[in-house]
Picture 1: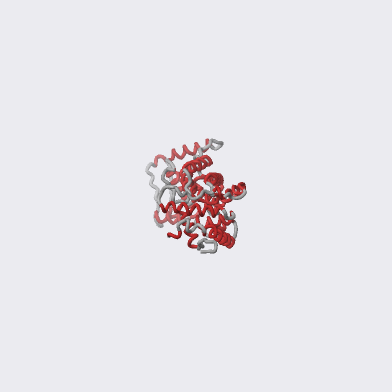
Picture 2: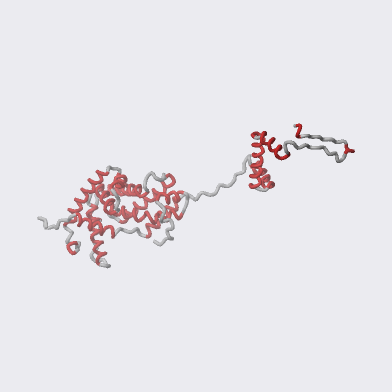
Amino acid sequence: MTMAFDALSDLADDVLLRRFALGDAAAARALTLRLTPRVHAHAMRLLGDRAEAEDVTQEALLRLWRIAPDWREGEAQVTTWLYRVTANLATDRLRKRCGVALDSVPEPEDDAQGPADRLQDKARAAALQRALSALPARQRQAVVLRHLEGLGNPEIAGIMEISAEAVESLIARGKRALTAALSGRRAELGYDDD
Amino acid sequence: MTDDGKTPLDDDGLERFFDAARRDAPDPSDALMARVLADALAAQPPAAPRPLPRPGVWAPLRAALTQLRAALGGWPALGGLATAGLMGLAIGIAAPASMADLATALLGQGADTYLVDLMPELDFDIAMDLSEG
């Protein structure tokens, strides 16, 4: 999407949110550009479904816009709050599904066009997504926050509202399950050629 | 190779799946970006307007003070007037002895003041002798 140059890109999220609450339309655009991709990627990894991820993204950000006038700077990071709200919304969706149907997760697209390495990335990412979708929700959330969003354990503990030790345990169990699920696909996905 | 024919995956191998997923991060569609921005602008409070002065019981007094200020020459003149007033008050309260010294210094301790009647026909006499106190 083409938007005006983000002249506010150096400002912290909470500063932008305060400007947003004062009616600054440029702050609204800057926050949309900055936060939507992160929330959407997180929702997509938790849900494995594009349509549901888009709904969750829109809802999570709508809640942020509504809470903006009451946001107290310095109490919590905007992204921490958003990750938590996104995960809660995703969990609600997963409960309604009564478990993830693995068939709903797309298979790697073998016949897609493009550079070979991009194709391989897509195949590996899709395989990982299928394995992630088979994990218990809390393990999936912890592994995604740590290894795909790149957050540290203290911040993950804040998002999930558990101790750092519990985060470590969830990640360890999640990675063991992922390793077991993906071992059989190593040769198929070209790792023997790396 | 394991008993079931699978190649075991170590931490390094799992990390390469994570690398691929990070490079292949799902991008939001243009339609989603537009919806989110529309939500933001719709939910955004209007920019706070500058408050307008409201007429009330003090309005006539404020108008009179404004006119007085303008007649005296604006805030700089009022500032000078206030400073002069305060200085006068301070001198009057705190420094009568200094003022006597100042008068002595200006006129001289032994100086006499003589009455010169330039218009004696008017019969109007004022005499003052500072040397006599």
